[in-house]
Length: 181
Image (cartoon, rainbow, N blue to C red):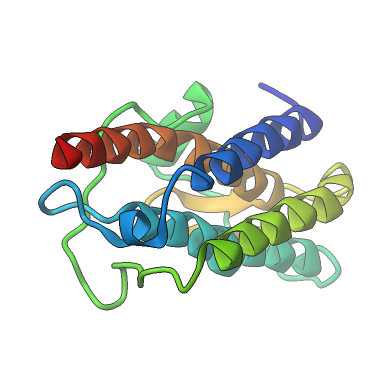
């Protein structure tokens, strides 16, 4: 298993790649849905950003804050969660969720906003990484599919999630090329 410092380095490299990729696209391209029943590139970026800021990083902070209290939740991962962390990555398959107001991301407002939010995530990951060494694995926050995850697992999940969506990025870019032909 990789260290949190290695996970942070991988994450920073992947996030920097996403930022460089944004330079290639106009706002029109970012909002275009090149493949039927799939998000636009902009929505994919929004999904990564929203997941990191509003779920994963928040869960890390909750786990770290819990370690200063006395509550301990039962640390049970689901079978899917155990498999995910044993492999160190999501399986290379498409994971589709039916469209819904709750889950389908909004279109981005601007490329600058996306870049700024990605930089915010990078900084928050850098800021929280040193605290993970001292964090107890007993303090967990539940993930809807993976079960109870500790702060370090939530941290690793950010990196794995960004890496997983590289497949979707490539698929959407290919869809834009096909539409342009």
